[in-house]
Length: 101
Length: 496
Image 1 (cartoon, rainbow over the protein chains, first blue to last red):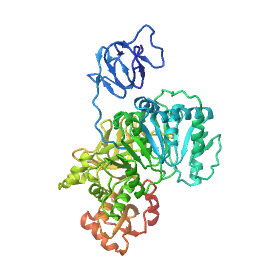
Image 2: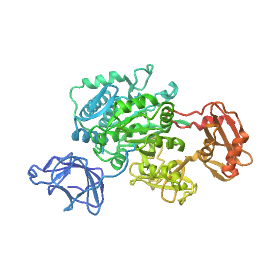
Image 3: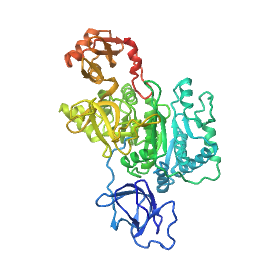
Image 4: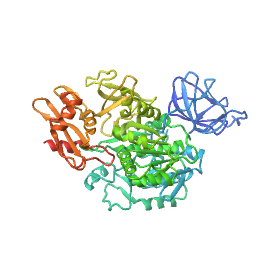
C-alpha cells in the first residue's frame, strides 16, 4: 500500500480492527495479524481470510513502536496484533493527567 | 480524525451507558450517536453551510456539535446574552446557517438563506428522521468549530478549530473510557465557551456522564451535585467564589460524598477563594486548567498534588503556586518571550507563546501563528524555576510606567488583602510624565469608607513606589462578563 501518514484511518484485512494514525515517521507498512492494513475507504483483499490467533487490538488503547516512530489509536477493537515494518507495537501507558474539563 | 469518531468509539465501547443528563432527560452513548447521525441528515438536506446554536446547555448542544461534524460543516455556538445588534452582525457572517435557538428567546430575523429552528422542534425533527448512516468526511483539516471571541475589545474575531486540533487535544489529555460506570461531570459553562465544548468532548471520550446545569446558582449547584451523585465538576472562578460564599452563609459543610474532583479555569482565581475552597472541600482534588479558545482549551494544569503541597507549605515559593496555572501539558511547548521576540528565562515576565498539535491560533481573517507554528497568546506571565506558569493578565493590560512593566495583578492581589476592599482592578492610565501610571478601581465592603490615602499607603508599604496608585476611583460593582472576565475597557472610561 501507499505510504503511511499521520491522520490516516486504516482497517485490518483479517478482522474488525481499525486504527487512526496519530504520529508516523518513516514507517512503510502497518500490519494487523501479520497482514498489511488498508485505508478504511478501500476494500480489503478478499483472499486474506480471518485472523485465527489469540492477539487482540483493544478499542481506545494507544499502540506505539518501541522506537516511537509510529503511534496509533485503536478506534475499532478486534482480533490481531499490530506491527510496523515487522516490529510488534506495544500498548502505550495511559496519560496520567487529572481531568480538566 | 473527525471529532465524531470520538463519539462512535464511546458508543461502541459502552452503548447503553448514560452519556447525558439534562433535567429529567437521559441519553445513552448509542442514543447520542443516533441523534447526531440523524441531525447530520437534516443539516445536509438544509443546504446550510454552518450550524449555529443560540441556546443554553441542553441536549441540542452535543447533538448539533456532532451532527455538524458528521455533515462536515462548522458548528458555531453563539452567546445568547448578546444584543440584537451584535447578534445580527455575527449571523450575517455565517450565512446560510441552520440556527437552533432557545425557545424562550424572541423570534430571530435572518437573511441569506439561514433557517431558524427552536430547540424542541429541532430535536423532534431529528427524532423523525428515519434512515441515517453513521458517517463523516475524514479530512482532519475541516473546520469543526468556529467561535467568535468574546469581543471585550473591538469586533469579535472568528477563531477556527479544525478537527485535527480538537482531536489532538482530546487524545493528548483524556484517556479513553477512563471513567468508571456511575461517574458524572457537572457542566455549568455555557455551550459557546471553549470549556463548554471541551467538557462535552472529554465527557464523551472518557465515557463520563455529563450532567448539564443551564443556569448556575450556588444552591442549585450543590443540590444537583448531591441529587445526581456528581463525581467531577468544572467551574469558572466566579462560580467557585459564589459556592464558597454560599457555604459560608449556611450552617456546617455540605455533604457531597460522591464529589471527587473540581476543575476550574476561564479566568484568574483569587488565592483567598481557592484557599477557602480547599478548606471546605477537604479531600476533593482541585485542578486549575489554563487555556484559550485558540488552543482548543487546556494547555497548562495545576494538579491536585500541587494544590495540596502548596496549601500545606510554609515555604513562600511553594505556597505561591496556589496562584499559578501549573505546568504545560506534555504535548504543548510553552515559552515566555519579550517584545523583541527573545526567549526569557525563569522569573522574567513577558508574553506567553505556545505550540503543539492542539494549537490552532487561526482566525477566519488571519493566522496568528508564526511560520514556526508558535502562537502568541497575548497573555502575559512568567515561569518559576520549576516550570510553574504564573499569569499576570493580558499583554495589552500590562501597565508600562516610565519603561517599567507592571502587572495589574500584583497591585490587585495586594489591595484585595485590605480589609475594606471587596474587589479591585488596576489599569494603566495615560500620563504625560510617565507614559502610563497606575489607576485603580475599588469596590468597598459594606459599611467601609473611602480612604484613598490609606489604600495608596497600603500598596506602597508592600510593593515598590512605582506601584502606588496615582488615582483611585470607587464604584459599587466591577463590570464582568458572564464568564467572569473583567471588562477593563469599560473601566478605562472612568479615568478619561
